[in-house]
Image 1 (cartoon, protein in one colour):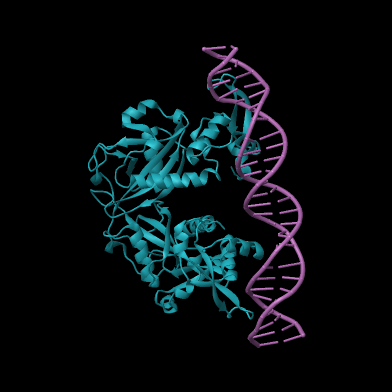
Image 2 (spheres, rainbow over the protein chains, first blue to last red):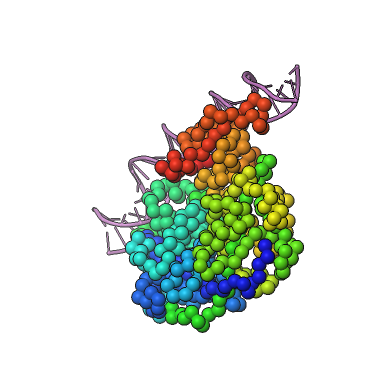
Length: 225
Length: 225
DNA sequence: CCAAAAGTGTTCCGTCTACACCCATGG
DNA sequence: CCATGGGTGTAGACGGAACACTTTTGG
């Protein structure tokens, strides 16, 4: 247990962001093509190096902010990736972070500015380095957590219809859900509140808009769906 | 997305091992007192720096091997810890790993050699730096996984009694389990095999010894308890 | 002979699942 | 007027939880 710093080597540490969005009944990922070597032209997650004066979480939030202009976004660490040759240039250890954002909050102009696009999860291309592994792990975690934590709301606007919410679950879990059973379960959750607003965009009849009451949830943080 | 290595800073990266053991109906942790500055004399996890030629997983396994002499141990990454000032000396980012070992496999002489001891989880002292956070996260993960992955067997000898197995679950979950229900569930799992060996150490009557058949489990890796 | 741990089934209750039809409206 | 998505209830199956007594044997 006698270890001294200077006998050891330093390495670059980066963060990579797996940014999930939801639109058109599909789960999407924000991906770009690398415009730098190594790996120029390959599909890639958006990332950046961790600087001296910022924690890992700070770095991940900064990178996300640079890309999307969004703050206070749900982000969770997915894990550290550290194979020796994972980066063909230098030794770089990367910490993957997963973010859930509402596509509508995302300024479309930034897509071009940063040369990124929303890619359907089911059409995932081969990504640079070990980024596919990162995405895979992020999805595994997301699937596991979606039923025990109120994450789905991060992918939707403040006001949403139950059908939209159901589509989010179906997209993430990859299976159809019975409408009546789903709505029965939602009704039992008191902090998913029905508003008296009606959405007439997606249906002729109009659908009730609901809202996730975060404060009420935090009272006793129990979530089961 | 234009980033160049040399504009950025390198940092030290270490691994810290949260080593769980089980004995005397209790979950235990292998802890030592730091014999180096900063933090000399404080309780701490056992760790080491990641070297140039090894992956994170390799580093964790090496550190575990140095401490215990054991290889092919169940290990899982817990997460990366990267607060700017988490190490009072230099900027060090640390990746926490959780290991499950059978206390009986651990050579007692190494305890003194490395100045570490088994500490009951319920008597956890204040640890160096953010090591308490690492332990907390490891336990959360362990609790979550113990019912959906066959982890418990790593904490027991090859041959074990059902009472021992139940004690492992009770220690990890922190609650009493009904004996009949527990045994009913075990009986339904075909790759937990009853041997015709009898353990006469812990009971006068003698208890049947069971074994986890890993190969049979891998056939179709489904576990629910 | 008694203390200590092993071993064994049944009932009840709540939860999950399957399932089909009417409603309101815009085009 | 009809196509589209919104909204609603019930019955049967299944799985989890509660629960107490007999057995064996070493000391």
